[in-house]
Length: 322
Image (tube, rainbow, N blue to C red; front, top):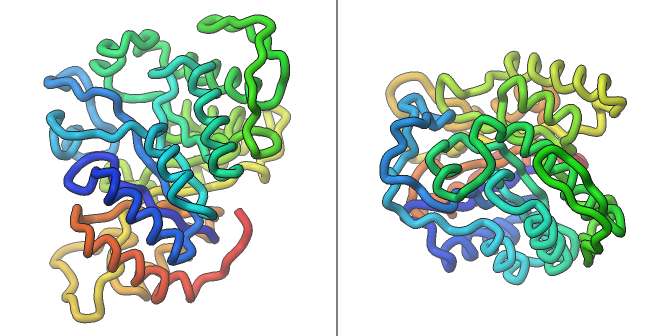
């Protein structure tokens, strides 16, 4: 199994120096990956949109907060680290010109010597689409599919010719190619039926976020969606076994001195033994790469949690190539 951390892109810890410090510590503790997140602007009013990973439907912290640009941060992380994989979780694909995005990611992959992962999503914030002059919100799924196909072509073919409904380009050189042979791996975010189809037909991995109810994917629900992904892969003539299964979720290994909180225990939050068992439950349905979110915006607490997981949980679990 492999383990990574989602770095803070917004909130009290969203300072470049702190983000880099967390990534360096994750690398020193032999984690496999770190991920950055994506928003470009946050509208004052989000009345027409619902955040899909919160029971309230609202983005924590509101709109008036710093939000670090993910591709710029990946460039800094490529310089600050040497081994750990660097990903987006997730990049909102329709927000950016696909040729420019492909070029930027290929350059960062060269800078990092082949460590980039493109976690890709369609987006949920209608008002942000409008502010950016992005393609129509209603077309975001089809646009994402097309842009991803074009980006993959930019990474694997030369010259590049692509004719689609939303983007057309003829006979251009898109160089340099990424350092990774076959291009940068694409992890498809989301847990809707459309996201499952996209993972099966286009993705190198499925990368859903499991937060709190109603968005949490329990192991049996996760397994049902994997069946849909595999069905879509077979229909597209792809090998379902080649699609890596991942999960992103909040994680907290409780200190031996700390008392358990009242009420039902959230998955991946508890004693080392409890968190270990949660990992094993999801590993049993195929998850091989876990990406963890901090549960509190406190630097010392996040660093301590990284260490507790590495020492008290990861050591109990098998390591395998994902």
